[in-house]
Every structure is written in C-alpha cells, then in structure tokens.
Image (cartoon, rainbow over all chains, first blue to last red; front, side):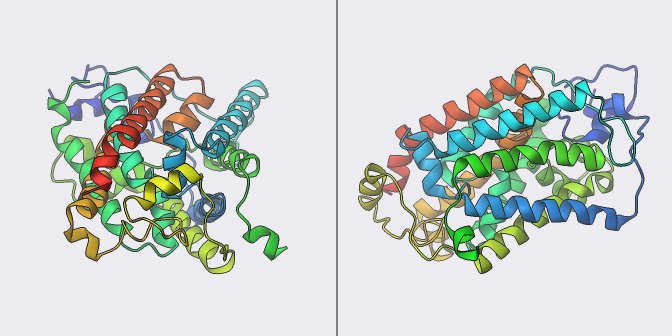
Length: 175
Length: 187
C-alpha cells in the first residue's frame, strides 16, 4: 500500500499522514469548506509574511549567532521569543475556541489534532542538528536571503532537496 | 522613530508579535501557522516525480508560498530601511570561541566567513550550507513541522506530539552546537 491511499477514505494507509500543515492530505478535510477567493486574496498572506520577516530580522531571530547562544545557554533572548510567542498563541487559540470566533469569511475555525509517530523523534533530532549548523529553521532561511546573504540560497535549495528525499523514501523510514 | 526601530528589538516585543501570527492566519483564512510545508509545496509544484507524498493539489496551499515570499521581502525591507549600523552584540564566551575558528565579522546576522559562495568549495562551507540545509529540510518534514508548525502552532494548540518534537529539536541542537559543530568549524 502506498500513501496515495490517504486520498481514499475508509482505507488504512500504511504510513499515517500526520502532516496536518497540508490540509489537502487530511482525509477529514476532504469535504473542504475552504472559502474560495480570487488569487489576490493571497496578497494578505504576503503582507503578513513581510511584517513577520521584519520582526525576524529586527529581533535578530534569523541570526546564526543568536541560535548558537541559545544552544550554549548563553542568552535568554531566543527562549524569550519562542516562549512568549507560544504564550500568546496559546491564549489566542483558547479565546478562539471559547468564544467560537469565526474567520473573516464567517467560516468555523478548524483545529487538527496531531497524532504521535516516531518521525517526530527521529525527524526532530535531525532537524535539531541542522538548525544548529545553519542557524536557521525554514522561515529564517527566506529572511536571511532577503537581507543579502545570497549564499543561503544554497542552504534553501538543499533543504528543498532534503524534503524531496524524505518524500521519496518515506515508506521505508520508521514512523 | 526610525532610529528607535533600527535598534535590535527585545524578545518581549518580537515574541508576542510572532505569537499573534497564529490567530491572524486562522482568522484571515483558517490557515494553520507552519512554514516548513512551503518546502513540500515547492517539491509538489516543481518535481513531484510521481511520489505519492507530493501528489496533492499544491495550488490550494499557495497561500503558504505567498507567506514565505513575504518573509523574503520582509528581510529585504528590514535590511534596507531599518538596518542597525552597529555590529551585533554577542556573549563574550561565544565571541572568544568563534575567534578561534576565524569568525570575527559581526556586521551581519549571518557570519560572512562561513556562509559565502567561495566557501561552498571548502569542506566547512559545504557541510554547513549543503549538509545543514539538507538536514533542515529532511528533518522538518520527517517530524511533520518545524519551529513554527510544532513549537509555536502545535504547542499553542496543546498537542503532545508537538511538545515531543520540540524537545527533540532542542536535543539535536544542543548535541550539534556543543559536541559536533566545534569539529566542523575547525575544518
């Protein structure tokens, strides 16, 4: 069996797709109620990305040195950033659920429970190793390139290649 | 105002702003915050190669590509209009350690002595850019998310698998930074 079965309901896929960042692979979402809007509706995500990227740069979150300090326990900065981001995110989700807040299109906001699989351990460790080498998670890579560190394009292309290789050998990896 | 904005922003400004991305994306369009999946969409769009993992309608996820393109432009704008003229201030112990590897340039956020084009042909540069990038892409997808999807979105939504993944990110990072990276940097 292959993961193509995730598209077929009522059938058990070999590797459960717990990658809920992708709505379309989530069988629970097949009857998609996603509001259809013209392409320029995506410009609002571009704008949020711009603001997000500015915060990344100005708070030095994309700095290789800040990541090194974090993993050497030499600075509280990154712990403060991630910790307070989680606190605000948690409070926001609590409020959205409690007051049943809808999207601007009046849709119900959906949350997906993540299922545990061993990939979170193996993949998590591998990503951790890469994070400390490159000093960047995927988001900061884009911002680093924007600030003029053009050689980081290689790191980004290599990350895309890594994602592709994972997809290629997914069935053979322990999950 | 501009001068004030040009200074490095403290964590208690930046962290909450990043946290606010979670409800903003949800309220604007029911989007779960997550960045590493953009790499998957690029694979699905450019080189799906009949691999089941890349057989999905990536166009429905195109918002994520707009989002990361925005992050790139945010980097451009911040470096162009709000750049801090002073070198980065880092912990003296880190500075001393880095000096031992010939890293002394703190004018940029990314050390130019490591991440530059000619360095790609050196063992150190190759490992740090090519192998490092590969681990980031492979590991995040294997884990099903990165710092944004797991650590921020997942933990905010009280997901145990995300707590486990985030702990593993940190363990991997500590091992690399303290035990392995010193060898790579001295290559």
